[in-house]
Length: 521
Image 1 (cartoon, helix red, strand yellow):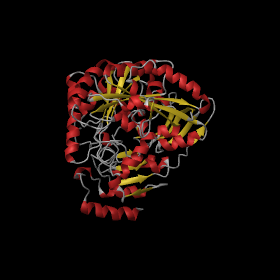
Image 2 (cartoon, one colour):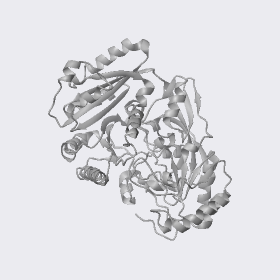
Image 3 (spheres, one colour):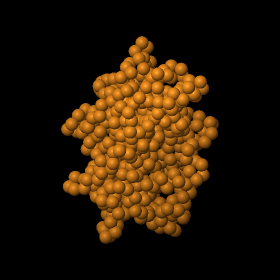
Image 4 (cartoon, rainbow, N blue to C red):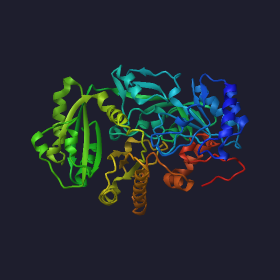
């Protein structure tokens, strides 16, 4: 290992690495010292470009080494080694899950990237019983968690729309989808964590044990520690799902019906809304996977509206309960004000529904349209200002732009734990809004980023009270504004668990700077 490091360092010092400036390059002896660490896994140098890529495809900051951990101890030794270098070292560490970040958040320029999917020592274990749970590695994909728990007739309660993400990655943000209104985000369904802090300590934490670190890490953007294991609450899994889509012509009915459904005692199991701008023939597009309730009326549906609103809902059931499911759905639909010809539905397995985005991924990969830039913008908007936001954004800013999928659905704040690091509006109901375009070519990227900036500028000017989900800021004042009154507590937690700002440098919240230099802002 040491000889390999020396060979690599000679090449590195001769050629340099693109987009890594001189002051970020660790000294020769510092990198050579990595070869002295006793590891169950190994460092590698051939996969640096891959470690500098993410789903966003908009940023690339190569590290100097990639750790493939063979154990949690490997991660702790590596972080501890960097910590002991002291405040004069610029070496940083980033945990990379499936690389689904957008703007380089899982990258470490001139630092060490830990490939969390290599962490196989934490074996997944399902514990059935009165309060079932699963212990899973922080580098495990949610799709693998689902496959494992379904063997016991169980499944996690809350999901993301895309399951090919790591457990530690989504728990470091929040983990949201159409079940969030009922069960809260994924971070509200965790019983225990194992974390490697920025000091290299391995700490087990829960709401009762080391609770401050537990709540700090959940939604903490990787700032306080690397999640190496999570204990996730489970519930009985249904076999089937009735999957329903309907259209609305006006925003008021669309949002009021969603808010009614998420507050009802008996309601759907999943609720998400979509905004469709300048997309003709939307019902015809549904026909490939959904059946119209009234085929004749659906075929005659026409509208001159540029903006349409889709409500997507599911009801879980087992085959022997199909009649009850039908009655419950009929009662719920009778309360909604959707356009009748637009009622479409299909029955799929629970797995097929939860893994639905992966099916689209396969098709896009075949066309070469998956690994393209994704200048996404995800926002959290208070209920009180969502109509003002929608009128300007959907009616004016995006009026002539077919800008990819747009999600818009409400959730209940009471389902979130305010002790975590996630920042939310101070209202019981708020909306998750996601602009999810794919951009092909420099012009498309520039245009989309410009639209994102217009949305943010309007929101700030109109005092919408927007918070970013998967936030992307680059200066300390912007982060202070994002966290508001919670900034001091966030900073104090950073000083406690990662005092040298070693972890998650790609978030650009705290910059690791040699002690002789001032902190930039």
